[in-house]
Image (cartoon, rainbow, N blue to C red):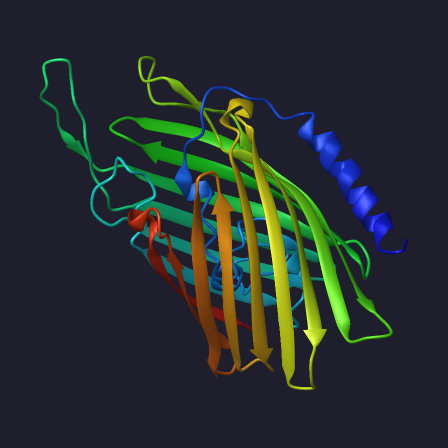
Length: 319
């Protein structure tokens, strides 16, 4: 019953914010859907997870209070982002994030994302066309609050610029809450979370190019942490993400993963992500080569969609 109370409160919050979601035509902006955090992504988790290795604003904003350090800077580069079958060649994704925790219960989080590097051959009624190089850029700023020892909440604003031969500008936001606790009888901790992510205005590439929606989604997430010994910790995590904007999309993603961590020195992750008609296998490892610096390597393999395979490298500094 004690665990069910926070689940019930989070469900009520999620139901309320879901009723405010608007829908238009079709999803776009794949830069918003990518999880750049090596730790949680290697465990198959989407954005909105309750786990994060440092990219708090894009993976788990509430996790910014899990570390003792007040400042954090992280960078991720992903190569092989064949995120759209229309694109040829390998795409390249960059994410840079930072966080500042102050007065123990407040945190400012910020980030910048870039996705580009591919090409699209357009066509006209006469059959000729031109090659364009699409790209998406976002600048993001958020605030996280530790309400008490269990509850955390956050809100994030997004500014988005997208180019597909024409430029579109739009904005949106994300918000969520998490509940975490530990069991007294066994060395087991858990976190539950709910969020509404990437809800925003229309994406308009000129009057004749159609109107699209930001890929707003509802996400439920949770993780377990079990202290196997004084040195080893076992991890398990799950996320469920459902696209609500546009409502007609009927898209979802379910991520599950397992991991193991040896103190703060090394960690290993395995997982997978299930989407309509396809799935991804994920894995990764992390290490701390020197004090306050973390490095993570993760990969994604898509057996049914080879162009979706990618490799990610993350570097973080916490002080």
